[in-house]
Amino acid sequence: WRHVVGSTSITEYLRFPTTKSEGQKGVANPTPPSYPVPLHFPPTVFRQANLDSFTNIVGRIRERVLQMDEKPFCVELYGGVGTIALNLSDAVSHIVSSDENPNNLKCFQDSVKQLPAEIQPLLDYKQKNAADMVTSESDLFQKCDLL
Image (cartoon, rainbow, N blue to C red):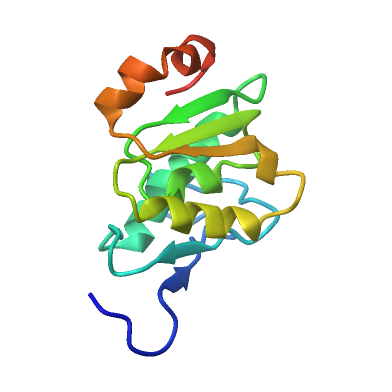
């Protein structure tokens, strides 16, 4: 891939429903973050083919995390550009996302820079595959509440 002109990535946002969908059993209706969560996708990273359907998955995760008694410390494996982690950023005490694709880190960092200043320190990223995370980051797994 060679960048010739224009933006180096597209920026998208998950759009959570604003009202409970009548008659649509199983559709997530979480309280969305109170701020926009940009997701950066250059051609060198994976993007869900159906972002609307994936939004429902992320919404279900948000619903569950928001029901927890305390904000959890989370570790995410196979995090990609951080779609799930970034959309949980207001609901966790800390989250560490990881993925082995070296192009994902910049996407994650670019998104974090656009989040509120008080949220930014809660988000970390490790450029490692899942096996390396498990073997080299055991301290994270000792203190994590949610994997």
